[in-house]
Length: 347
Image (tube, rainbow, N blue to C red):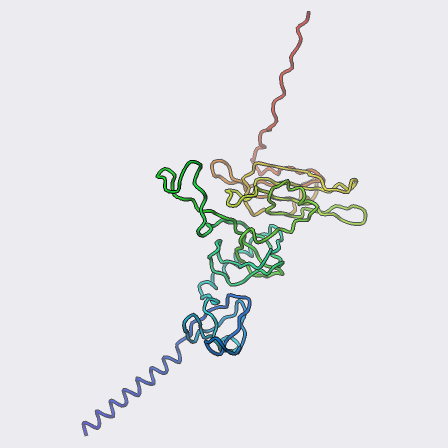
């Protein structure tokens, strides 16, 4: 009797363990990942010859059911199951970074509209090797928001003249740095991400872009528009810089172009050089007593000591003037003093 009882107890324990194990497996949540390519087909098996059993696209959430070599078996939100290459997936951490980046980008004012030169990735951080999920297609439009720099993997600047890479006093090889731009695809609300600077072109109107004089235009804005016959013509603010990457400033020159209705052409109403300008530039309108409501723009500049301060300007007709903050003193004139007048001695 005792042996039978022990046998029954043992069987009951085994059955309970099996049921507990099955219940545990059924309740274990599957790993969630996200598709990081524009579109990919799901396969029915991992083999050279396979059948397509479904399709998923960028941003789709999938559950990972199994892994084999470089493939993952997934289930889409619509219930489709199949195999796809694991390199086309990103994890929850990357997805959360993309969501945060999109939220942060939504708080930044656009600095212009650009077009993608070719298909390019929207990275979660500046850098060619940073993770990505979405892409800009060739010719696709995007708002340009701000700039950052990152090292180019495996690229180094040549040593100074007369030095060799191994020289003790030559220092370590300096990595090449390149510009990346945070953009938001159009139409809004679009996907946000960092793109390599040389992969996009600002859509600056040719009428004013032709006056860049070899400088790189990094931002442009319509300040106002004026009548010319039966049409209205926009007036522009441009921010420009040198044609180099990884400069310490975002721009070092601004130009305002106003429209001469009599001569039917753009003219430079204002130009300021030697700026240590920082993006973003803010554009709007404010009321100025008797002058009325005027277009204004402002941005941050950095001085030789690393301190930043805001500069604001107003456009009144074809005239651009600084708007001084309370207590701010006007800058001293940079004009050279007039030479002294020499008087002839009376004979």
